[in-house]
Amino acid sequence: MTDVDRYLAVLGVARPAAPTVEVLRALHRAQVERVAYENLDIHLGRPTGIGAAESVARIVRGRGGYCFHLNGAFAALLTTLGYDVTLHRAGVQGTPEDPAGASGNHLALTVRLDGERWLVDTGLGDGLYEPLPLREGSHTQGPFTYALTPSVAAPGGWRFTHDPRGSFTAMDFAPEPVELSSFAAEHVRLSTSPESGFVRVLTAQLRDAKGIHVLRGCVLRRIDAGGTEERTIDSADDWYDLLAGVFRLDLTDVDAPAREELWHRVHTAHQEWEAAGRQ
Image (cartoon, rainbow, N blue to C red):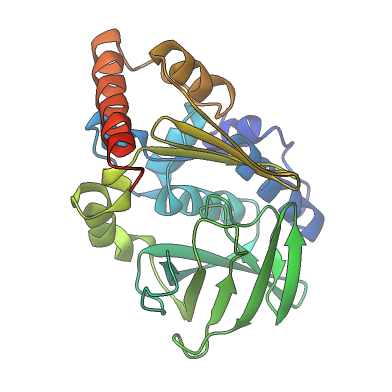
């Protein structure tokens, strides 16, 4: 069995006979439903690369990653299945005050198929559930409404604006194609800098048709059309059961001492956050 076959088995999708829009949608839905947006290896002290083969191997063994891993692997899968995929330098703005533009803190994908281009992005956490046709307009997917407009900050590119309930404000991406390796330095910064949100807070997120589960530290949120439900996970057993059950993460390679240390650090950070008034 090839890595592509193993990848498709994780997604629960049979190898398609041809690259079609319907298959593209199915693959995208399956990836965001089954492969978590997560940063556990940063908090386990296990440096990762972003090469496509390494990221595919992560997914095959039951792990996820963030945009460079998830979109890098997905681009490789789509290319192998016959899709015309382009990688783009992009930038996610966490708040309206963050500078807009394709800063390079995100990897975005487009696919050209049957004369139309599609925005494909499995690395935005509470972002897309299905690909969007790359033309101006608004789109509702589950509890979120998104907008696509030409980007002012990245001339010739596009701006994806998130729903007000989302975890970020917007994402701009530039029109020029780039190589996955061009994100290597930014990956090192995001995974090692004390200023990086990935370093400061452990997270796992998994999307579905109706909403998303989001774990930040010890706080689990479910966001859907009914609103946002929140609960605090206060035991190591419940926390690891959640990672395995809700987020589908295989952590069998994390031994008992490493599990204990990770839980201690995450739980201590949560207590400090609570003591500071959740600031």
